[in-house]
Image (cartoon, rainbow, N blue to C red; front, side, top):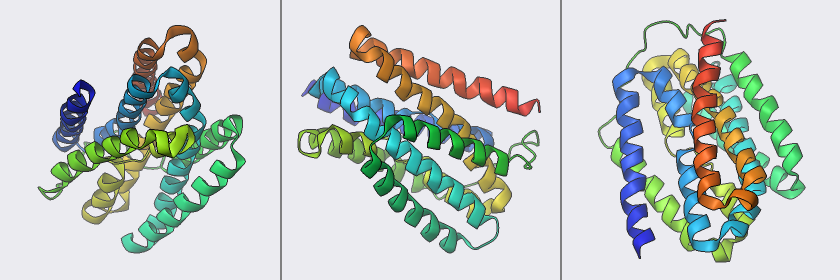
Length: 254
């Protein structure tokens, strides 16, 4: 019961903090923050607490396949969105997600998921590198209902995955963990209100954060059995945050 109340309190509070920070400091920071493994870390944390470290460890291949599908979605969206309308980009991106998720799940290779994800992340960063990242951040106003929607969606996603984890199994539970509850609506609203340039900033920031997410899951894969669930997750979160902001700083200097 304590874990249930933690889910109800911690998840919406984190979503609110990240959403407000993005609204306050602009699309560039919003993209970076939305790329951090917030939902992923919470799901892995509660899977560990409720199902055990072994179950959480078995969920990592599915999570990496899901991360690969998410990044394929963003690459498709930014490529199509720079040339076409928002509805067309959304449909193409969602179709890409379904196809990539099915393919990577069928192949079931952790190493392949890592390699394809790295290639997709690099492609996104290259495609969006022409954007003036050093320019003053633009604040893209979103409707008032969007932040409560993110909070509710993230909380319901966490509750659904952790409650049905035994039935779903570790692979399916892991694949659902990287779903971009914050970043996807943020990219679409930025596209609608700020154009392809603002959308590209969100997607670029999310890709930079995706490098941290990838590191997050790899740290869990390497340390969870030896260190235990909670220390491993804590170390993975720290590495993800540091990797994200260090990479962002390095790319800013180029």
